[in-house]
Length: 298
Image (cartoon, rainbow, N blue to C red; front, side, top):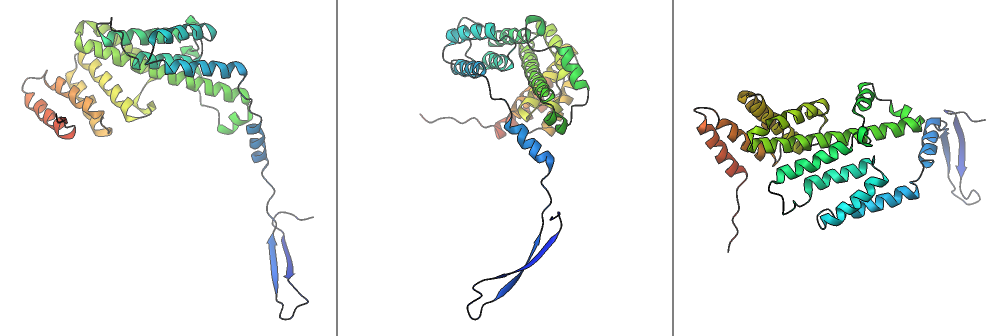
């Protein structure tokens, strides 16, 4: 019998039998009814399915494998082979294998760190393709993100759409990280051996399809992208001025200690121009000023 917005009027009396008692008028505004969508959201959150026993066990195996990354490469590879047989399309597994390729100690038998890491990243890149039983179909991924993403409310109301959206974003993130690492390593190799420019050109062509500065998460990744594109312009396209332009824009837009790499790349490019040696010398002095080398006392 009370509707939202109604005002209830009354009085409150305490100890009315005692002398000097006082009374106080009371006003109460009836609140609106709870929103239905809030209760539906709470219901949706409470009904989320817990991970299956198989999922929990697989995650535990993956966590254990990650701990072996820097300690025991042989045992790590044994676990990796087992888990790839179990779930070849697992995005978390492929992400871990990419971390191994980029961070694990290089075998003592390898002569070139860049070439070894490039080979390992290429293995992950190939393994993630759906043609090799991996999770990523580049065409399907492109088609999905070529459309407007569903609204948040639509995702909350549709568990299947929510699950698909999460999976697609995980796949895109893995693909972008792999392509960025792949191109960076190709750039490192070509920077030392100009005959390897074809590998850099191919890697950058694939990179540009999926990665731009706007989609990267932090300045460290954006610095890496700038150096990749500058090396591609200098080595593959023979455009030194373009390389300088890319690097100077990175210095202007980005921040952090990784900008030292941009300065070092600029020094190399300036060295290719006649009469620009003094600019490179000034940059070297700037690097020493901003990133001093501390000597330990004996």
